[in-house]
Length: 623
Image (cartoon, rainbow, N blue to C red):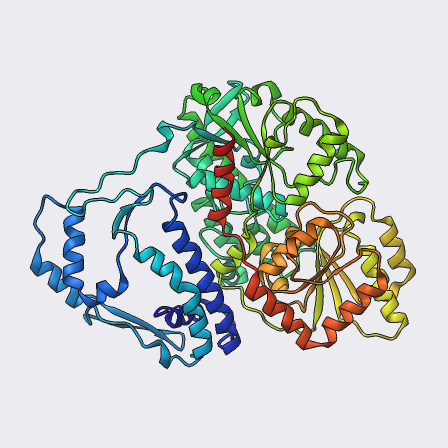
């Protein structure tokens, strides 16, 4: 409670829009309370970690700083006496930092003292703060009941004894390896949701000290460890080293040279830099010959620099196969990516785990227009399940799809225990948070968003019929913006739009967009529409809810699961029903606001660490 006002001031300072309102604070405070509860639950739960930790009370620290810190110093260094003079001077000389009206003020040598009175905060609302206090107080009390120095598994530590490291669980559990073979080729800033998720798995694996990242080496025909430059490539975040905004502000004449210098300094930088630099330098919107020439020049040079760096590392390294891989567990982040090298070698480990984000090509789902993709999915999935591997999926709906397929196909030796559920993280929302781009804003023209691949099962044809019917009835609907790559079998939709050319003025197909464009669309759309005939995850729907944006969905089971009963649900062929619901939310701001409040109150984005812990726990439980 004491920190909520100052945290909001810091949030405003990082934000690039005017979102200093009571509504914005209420949303921020509610989200902060949920984050607080997740944090407290993690550190008061025996299942969370085996770390030894010290619980240092804020009230105890500011009330008795010398006594508290003296005990703490003694805990970490029991064999050396505490320097009382240095301790006292440190407590008296520490700087106090405050942020108000987006300006940070540092009061040097002000010493440890109590914080601000949050009741004087400009958006203080007694009812709101009481509800936040009631929500968070039980978690606080649960934490306060723990010994102040403790091990999370329940063992109490003697404050007078030195801290011993927590036991290494790898001594009693199997080593987990993560295969990075396919992702090393596409480790740049990727845009599609499955690839974004796979990149998340790779980067988490590189950062996790309990995991070994490996790749399949065709020369030695076995798995090997990654060299430093390969790990760096996987761990690189988008726009590393220099942001797109900084590049654009460099100025057009010097921009190309700036990008070239950046490629020399950091050849692993994400390929989005090539596009951003070329677009600005060529004064174009990603279309003309000047843009293509500059982009390709930058990219070829960057890949050349990358090859030099990689070759240096590879030449200095003598690779050897990983002997203990056969006794460990191999995680492959994509069920479709494991067929590139020799499959016999890929399947050498006895214990394997696959993650699958796409079950739609299975025969018992909505028919696809790509039979070869369907056949490939069935073949690889059958091999993996019959080998006894654990397969992880993102939703209960995908598990039901898989179970129905297993029952129909009669695959021998397949058990339902081989199917595990993990919770996909809110990756795009976390990326927006890191850039302080989560607050809502009004666009120049109101619009409705449809975030999904353009293909028959996504049912864009239904939306085209809705906008046509609105035109025939002289109903002015907001513009519809569809984002997503063009898939197979869209001739019917294309023919419908050609037969009614006036629809192209009200329905805009932008194709695939980068993450920052997509983030701003989520932040500014009135609401979204997702009328899919079939789905197995509902990732676009979850992203809408992450950004507190209402969404109308079809009755497809995955979409109903994604909205958790909070959003309107309509049959995927009910043109009249969709038109009525779209009109209601477009014309009635109260109804739209009620749905937004429902999201803020009842929906919670999934943190990356939570999702990663779920994946690791499912693997540990199975093996």
